[in-house]
Length: 184
Ligand SMILES: [Ca+2]
Ligand SMILES: [Ca+2]
Image 1 (cartoon, protein in one colour):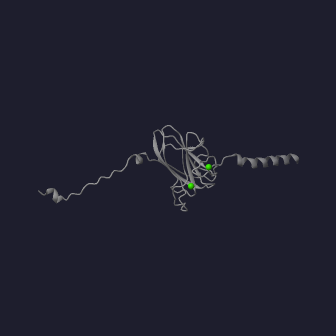
Image 2: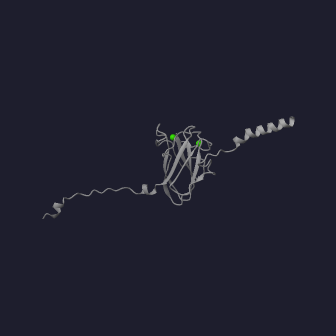
């Protein structure tokens, strides 16, 4: 009887410890920078939910937070300007920041509040960044939240280099009456 008692106790400890020692599966985005979901090319889009992820990273812009986060990585082959947007249809108060090569220290860029979305009309608390990337560096895009907020996100990363480098020049052409051209 005592032997059975020890076995049941051992099983009980195993069931209690095991769930907390495993990282949960959440379907999109990587849990940390080493396991980041790689973005192969632009444009790129993905959807996911941060609520079952852990809080691995934070950047202050200006608020610090303890919200769970997921990570994507991108290594551009040429210098470029990119727009990283959660404005498509994220449904919570997001925060978005970028690390360059190492996921520690001060973030390369960070944004908390820029836009509303169809699923988050409360206020313009969803995040959007346009930044310069250098060829060969690896950038980590961290989808995070304000305070302890989490939820479903839509991520879109687009190359906007051409849009930013070309300015529209308008030229005013005077309208000359046809009759005047032929008069002598
Ligand atoms: Ca976080
Ligand atoms: Ca926000």
